[in-house]
Length: 315
Image 1: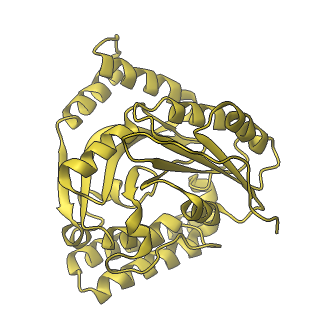
Image 2: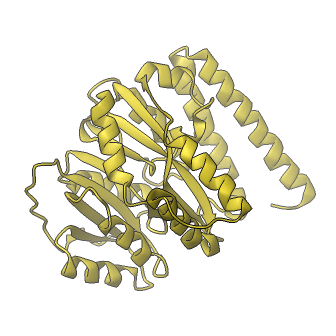
């Protein structure tokens, strides 16, 4: 296993606290530049952008080094291939920021992503802030980003589909809420399940990774898939409050061959179900029965979906 190599140190002193954005990088040569450019364009500028190259062989690591050489806010770490969880954990260990965020290296964020979430944390005295996201096929991602930017600027012409999207987004700008950790957990996998499970639509106070409340030293499970299913509720358990905005600030790229592509997911169905059972056990032990039943019903639906795929031969 290669030793971790830090390519560049970052020293940033500004009045606003430092935010570390952790980006696991693996075989994303086609997408990494677009991702990093969206991070460098953030309206919140006191950033440390940690690019953790997890043993890429397609030139992704070299692109990361180029960005680090040009911009002092970018740090690059190269390590042997260990998987997404290990890459995120590496970022957590070396991050210098008071706040942490995770962004997947093939995704794109809107310019106000960090600023909006940081303001939510302060407004509600929360430990986690989450935003809505939009899933976009690669061919549509740029168009959706431009439309959202036009909406923010109050300009642009939209077709009928765009009008519906923009109307939802405008309504979303007025929708935000805050719940205590216990309130969030008791309704888990309910109305706000789209915001809950994924790690990459959030900004976290660093302390929640150290076990300041219920769960000691939370890290992503190395060597396991469905890492967000296994950890999102633990992060929430360590938070005092969770704030949510319905404004879409994160654009998730759907691409064939990605780990969440359904055709790939079918090969991981046993791990998927195992992760769900472990999460259900957490809620059962704490007697959060509403959340447990929500998750139980989701588990049953997954069993049925996997079974239908097996019977029809669409494995």
